[in-house]
Image (cartoon, rainbow, N blue to C red; front, side):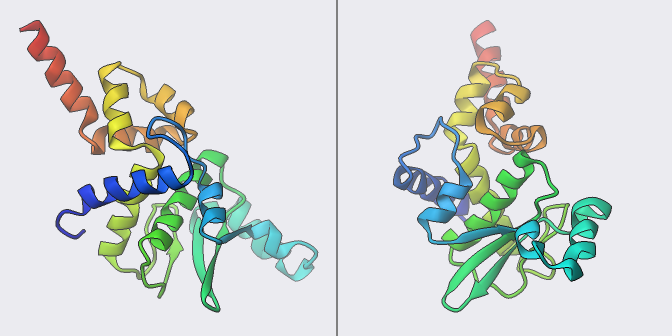
Length: 192
């Protein structure tokens, strides 16, 4: 990740939230973000609908091996579309779509963009992946919101519920932002 990118991601996420008229403490809907940027979102079932020859591929990616494919940004002419795995739960789809939209917002090159269950994009630029992860985190749970919730000692389950993300994503943001550590240190100073 480029030096200083975390601060850039914070600023950019707040700008994007402002465009969507969503404040830093409210949930962001990545489907609305995609619509704002003119990016159509399709699910695997949309692609396979009415095409029996694709039924086994749909079953493979949604039931047999759902972790083999999460999402992809696909260039179409001068635009982009996103294909997502309808076999994943809604909270996971939120974070996956926010990650893919972060690539779009950051105007990353679109060479190979298949997202796996581990959150990696196969054969992609590691720096771009780190930047997309950071921006998607800021879009879904801004650092300032994480800090406020940590100071209120809000459990990760409530953070996840409020922002419409998975528990795993909420735990990552509450840790990655340093919010929990900062809140614990502040509480320790008050009691000392």
